[in-house]
Image (cartoon, rainbow, N blue to C red; front, side):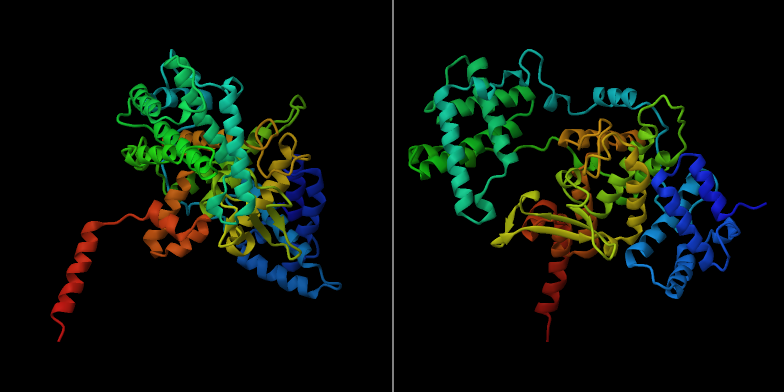
Length: 509
């Protein structure tokens, strides 16, 4: 006897593929589908008949909704469709069907994925063979341990730091321009660079720094040379360059407030402006994967996450490991359609930055302090996307994550964070970096990192459209920043263009 829609839901329930709260919802949803297809109930609707392309069953379902009295709300209609998609996806994942209709199976770019291996074994070998050892690993005798923690800073330098912090805060409140404020993460980076510089003076040069000597150019020049030699990155490193830049920026603020000599600020500015360009550590082409290749990786994790798992009652959170793999696929899929900053991916919260309106549409919303630039063009900066309208095919995946897999994670019932670590906490910047970098490397062998999605997306979109405004909008950047960071000028191409234009102009008439 062929399996029916009702049998399918019962089978998935027995396999533990559906949460208790979803079982009745799915039963009601497939009942509507059976009625829409002309059957008296889901118990007599053959699965093979219901297994159609969504465009087919979706149109019949919508016609069925129109016959109901009273009419179902738009939200209930949306949830019914989502539940049907979910049942179909789970049926395919559990081997009850070949592949969900319209799922795009086989349509993604066929990247040759590496065979599955243990993450710890693979990443240990990956780190050992990293090509940037010198830039990221200091010698044990000198390491980053030479830094001087804030509590150990001399009292007068601590007082000077607090004076500068007060000035920065007051200027941020008084001036609406985004360029006049410093984000907390930027202030934190100031303190980290100063800790390294003061540690160099104290632990390497064995001198006692004071507030006055902190702004002298000669010790800074010594630090630049020493750090470049230590890192093997002559003539200068990012750490050396940004330390000078931050000391110079602090001096400018204090000199303007008449807390420091103006000449000192000018000397530091001249030192900063005279520094050579910092050579790039990474070759971006070594870390690049196309959007199609990343989608192949995402699909692989979605498939692994949907696989059945044993539940013998001995595990506190059964299915959490599979859910974690599914989560990787969801995060990569979301990055592919929205090249947001890593911070925003981490800070997505259900009901806040990720919300659903009364029509059932899902929206991503970030405002003000939730963005890298809080104020723009004299007002509060915003980043908003109607996900349902923009990429409707992503919504079933989002629903599946929210309804089936996320509830399996620790603290899922208490946290509003869309994505959670294995410990049930929102991701930190480093944790999300490692989670996705390792996930991609495991499948491809490529040393990819999350911020690369912005470069990949911008390069791809500019090649396709040459539209800087479009790319800036999608990245949440300004046109000027996109042109500065991502515009690649082909000189030969520009010369060829000039050749044609000049020929037309000089031979006109």
